[in-house]
Length: 449
Image 1 (cartoon, one colour):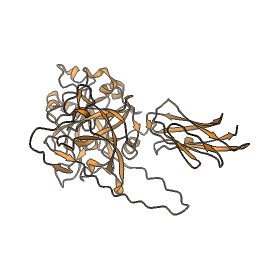
Image 2 (tube, helix red, strand yellow):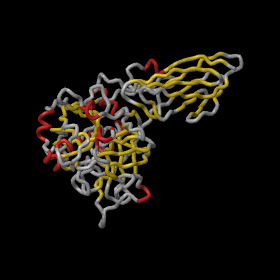
Image 3 (tube, rainbow, N blue to C red):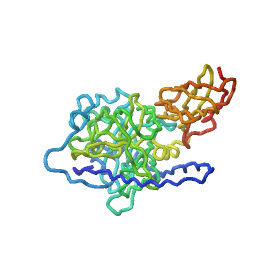
Image 4 (cartoon, rainbow, N blue to C red):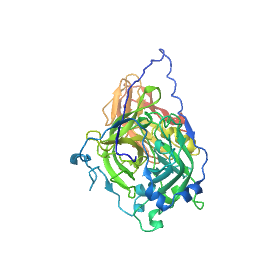
């Protein structure tokens, strides 16, 4: 975003609710679609992006919405009480400790260079995401697909090159790109992201995956590491936002971070519905930071920065699209067909006046706030349990996170009918990414004491 202006989110909530006929089972939502770019030449992108061109790349423009004229006077800032980052500047950002290869979060985060639809040299941020391919970078869709001018046809960006742990202030080429420059081969975006309408900026579809080519037979993931994606739909989290803002007062040469607390924020989706996103008032948006990762306290990838505002008092904020069903789910199933994602399973047991569920995740993805629902037999009553809520014979518990290889146990006290031995059902809900949903449900016997 080379101009100094503020783009304000235009959020329109027009949700239509249609009840299914009585007794009819709700149809599963359609699997979201994705589109892929024509194949590109990775080496051509690497050759194009010399160190000088990298240093001169401008921040990408955001899809236009409402442009708010900047009021006279000095640029506004994040109020002192909202700055959570140690040593933060007035916009909430602080420098990541150099060299950037010290921490996994900064190694996997990098600067994404490209030619936009108008042929201008631009940059965004991005991060290596865990995959079976080992070659995938997640970023914002508006960085890889857009229009040259209002009314023009949308086009894919060209000469995309990703530099993990990019350090534009380093003295040598090896320090500036410690893991090399990686040229793109293909790019995927959700099909509903058009790059044309003003709603793209505020949509849940502003997320993309870039596949880079190998270097010397090695994958990007092997060289720089990768972040574990978390299937989630936004909400309240404490996050670290990392990236390379390049609008003034920044120049894209340094990796910066911002500590933030998030809340739910609406976004446009097909049919006029509203999907969940992540918003914070602790960091202001600056161009070039688009596509940068938002990580939880364990370094898990919750979303990527896509929109917000930087320079108007009362409007300074940042928004990320979470790795949800309609965005990340749509592109990862196409970009990494051999990868195992959202492979949830549950096993139940009943003993000692309690019902217990063991929830397991296999593969490459974690999941946040997975509902675990017990269906109790008639006459059985559930007691109180942290994070659980009862409604009739159903008790739903929501563990904060289910990570690959780390089973989570949920237990609820239950009083069964005297002398009865009844069946309890426990279930979890995964998405279309789950390769086998038959283990999403389990049944077991509950005997009275």
